[in-house]
Image (cartoon, rainbow, N blue to C red; front, top):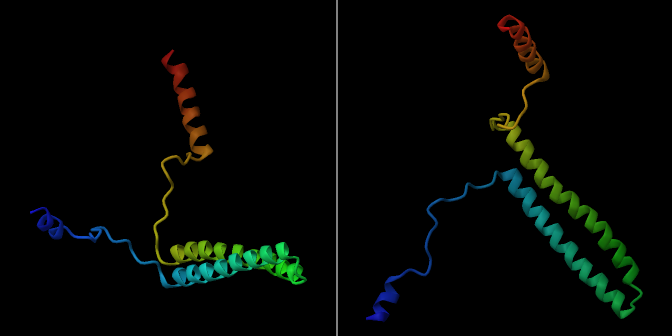
Length: 122
């Protein structure tokens, strides 16, 4: 009886709300960033192991790992920049948030209107 109840349950349940697929340029930049970052991590481990072993290749590998870290940082920034450019070019509506302040000129005009109405009421 208990065995039958277990077999009727699914092991995998599909999520009803599917995430939208990333645009192609953004996905390409993201894949590139992951590949570069993984190579950078491997270079860091190799540099560490060469340093611990006292190998003569420790210095060149460490310099390469530092340069690769700069490139990996840029590749991650490239994903963010590509995403923002894609949004701007493909019609994402940009509206000010609810915390946006009104322009100072409009606020000054309201203050002047209130100040002008005060002497009349008194």
